[in-house]
Length: 298
Image (cartoon, rainbow, N blue to C red; front, top):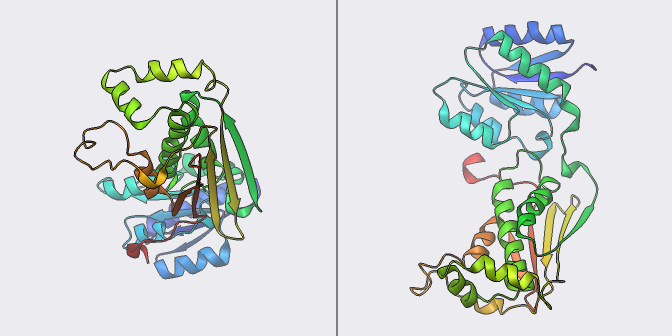
């Protein structure tokens, strides 16, 4: 294995000593600091291959949140006291490679560091590529909606990007709409009545087998443009479109109990920009390639 640089943010001498002894055995080098400000500078200077953050250190959780996407392609290990449940949950949500409990167990630490060091190279980071574009085409098969949405996110947002779940859910809603309301031409009212009668999927299945609906497809495109700092998606169906300017209000008293009608509202929260073409059979989505830090993180 080529020599790697490991950067540790920890103020515990026993942890630093154990890490140094262990990493010497792996043939790797360790840089360690207990200062959050110095840690940020060392990340930029050293470009470490692997990062360890001791969440029991004050401000360390903030340091983890503030790591930008250029650092998400490398494994990040987190140390935490067992009582730090919220910190451990957030670390996992941010996509850390592993969470290790304090006091640090040598065998557990050796296993996770060895695993991380041997899998360093193959973390996909879309921001490190040039412009990329993908086009996926799917038929009116609801079982393919979630896999297509996850595939688009997997190749457009870096591992550890906290927006991956919300963007996936937004794409699922819009792909589903493209099939249901676009290609199959099921109106809001038809879906409402079919759901009330528990026959919606029978209706969708019947239409998907008949002309003119059965041969229609959905085109889902993803474009990653690092030079513009943007990810763009667009989803186009082959239906007649809809009047997106006059959507039913999901909060109206007649719709408040409905089991549908909130998909576009949900999707708007996942993307920086959401708009339709004039016909209403193509939706355009946009968000920054890198998450914008929240006020709390700045």
